[in-house]
Image (cartoon, rainbow, N blue to C red):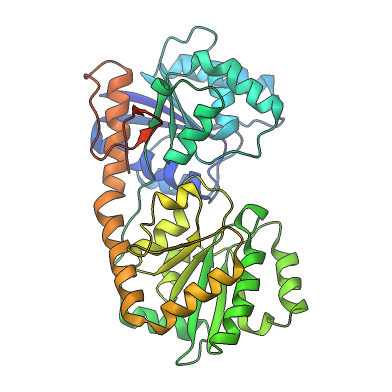
Amino acid sequence: MIKALLLIPTLDRSGAEQQFTLLASHLPAQGVDVRVVALTRGGPYAADLAAHQIPVTVVGKRFKLDFRALTKLRHLIAAEQPDLLHTWLFAGNAYGRLAVGRHPKLPVIVSERCVDTWKSGWQHRLDRYLLPRTTRLVGNSRAVAEFYAGTGVPRDRLEVIPNGIEVPEISVTGREALRAELGVAPGTRVIGFVGRLASQKRVKDLIWAFELLRILQEQTIFVVVGDGPQRAGLEQFARDIRVDYRIRFLGHRADAQRLMQGMDIFWLASEFEGMSNSLMEAMAAGLPVVASDIPANRELIIPNVTGCLVPLGDRAAFAQTTERLLVDVPLATALGAAARQRMQTEFSIGQMVERYARLYRQVIGQTEEVEAPQAPTVGSSPQQAGG
């Protein structure tokens, strides 16, 4: 039995925390004894972990540099004596590596979940300073791994383990019930977006694209599921261009994946991603997707096979591609079916968990390192893959 300590800043409901919770909940079936540490606070996912009998400790970090929290974390690691430490996100990655000291007595796996262009100079300097304490850096896409290779992480320490996704049952009656719940008139086509309303997601581009689409296809509405710092501004923008009566801002919804079954097409316009959970959920729901042509989205979408890619920021291309799918129903159906099949065969939760468990065994020396199935490469060196 491997004893693993998993550290993350919070257990809020967000994409990284969702994947963290899925991993922690399923690892015991792979022979891993899991303990979870939330650096700053708990959150909604604490209940999910409790339901799987995963112990959770909250450190209670209050400041950006909190020596009390760092000391508490050091004592916790010493008391637990795990076989390995697996940290997630910038604060968790920084505090975890600081806590183990200059000469760690256990392997430290760092998870990075996005192409972190937001990081400033001091954050990159801290990452470089802590690199000697890093056994492996895991990206959830090749795009993330390439980004960190570019910051100086040696390629032999990089791993790619994509997100895992649950593929739901599709219910025709459920679809109609959801459309009625949203007040969608019969014959109306629903374009959907799910995600945080922040600049990275470029939702304003999608509102512009919808205004263009509405000229071509009057019987359409745009459903925006999610919340964030740009919500008020986006709602005002929709009013300014007089398209607000055709756009529904639903805010954060815990049942976002269920709502997807009431959509006809899914949109994602992000300028950067790690690996989008909402895009994967839409594909798993069998939706035809139209997404920005960025590296992370290319790892999920095979153009014109499992979805459509359009140039970043090209609002007209979003509208034109979507109009083509609304008209060509067989094509849209085929794209959605192929997307769903790809999620089932290549990006299951089971595959993701197995690949992390394999990595854990490798870093503590229980098995010889072997190449995982369908391994992506980072540059010219083959790296272990995952889903």
